[in-house]
Length: 582
Image (cartoon, rainbow, N blue to C red; front, side, top):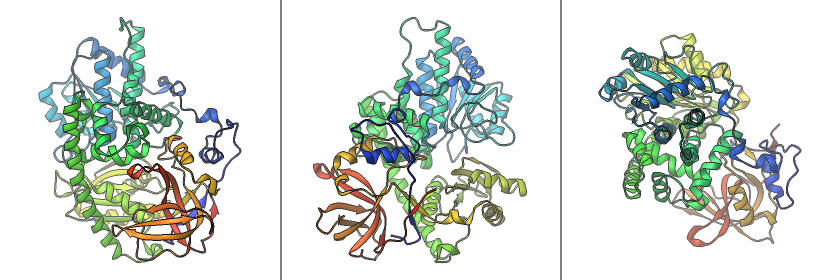
């Protein structure tokens, strides 16, 4: 509970038509997110955007088709996060399905190679003797590595979705919907999505060439991987991405997921039949990401490529153990960061426009998670730095932003005004990564604070929680909770439904020293409903009535098949003013 956060209510535009049995609550939730009819709410693969408008797609297809025909060695180079791991797996599996007989993969090691196709990774690839290097979820910022690969006589095909810099790497072909002038309507594809689209185009080309004597390969079997990578990378779930994720979730709910994903779902304690995007984001993705953060993402990719259930189970268990270590290290780093915040001005209004933290004991693979936590805690853009595993004189940093500030643009501004201060950087509107020399941290902090301060309107620093309005007593039922859960996928840019009401507090208690368990009622004579606020105990008991923002969720704990409120935020009674988002 923090009085610094304000609940605001979404506007609901005119909407319809809807079937008679479509819940009114769900109608208004979808309409406020731009889905204003039942037809628009249908996420059919037939409505997926066509690949043809992706720039340089024809050249990329020609390059791959020739490599397949000539039985050339294609080496897929991914990234060491979940998007990179799933994208690499989609590339390897998909190319083999389409007739490639010699496909290998290599993923950079964070400690020894750095990011992407680096010169150090190129040196290690020599022993593999690639004919064609295919990057996935990386490459657009790998100028030196691409040049090193070209100097060795290899073809280089870059597939990426990160924003390009002023100059492009000297690759043979680049497929990236975010290149200047690219006509592809959706700029929100994740790296795995770009790779999937390239495979769709390649299959069409091979079909036209008569490559498939019998039935052609069914690339839809890769959609579970596309869904996991898309959700994990937190790209906006626009209409096209929602179709991709919905199709992947459908496969996993039907028990048709890859063996490795099924093993990870089980280890995460999730149910396949009711799997959601949130289950991917909080259950599957962290276990894959942990390998790339602390050890070698090759283990995660091998788990996803493996078709043997027993072997996949063993690799998933190893990933789960690494994730346990990651959680411990992350908690220690977050505690350090919280302590550093305590040394800053107590009032959030006294904080600088961005929070920039460094600790020599931190692990570079986990700073992104720390930055995310601090961003949420302070509602400020946050950057966290740790010593580079490769060079102790270098720092690796991760940046996370808030709505209204394009963090990569802020870094671009610093780079333009202070050339050489940042060694390298790249990313998106909401997240970025960068490297700089240790001695440049203080001047970078000064420059970055000035950059953010000049770009960030003061009103954007007011932390807000968007609400879909109140629910009526008759709405607090499991049937609606299930309809809301399955109406997703919910995620970045298409947030899960959150409601707000004033409740009478019947009972409350503290669980595990940090969590708040409550029994709430909408009226003094009305029925009680169970509620929980994870991390909500801050030493102040709730008053007799509270104004709470919450999610309505099915409660399956110990087979009870009920419903509960997942509290996101609450105020003491009387509630603060509720605004409306314009």
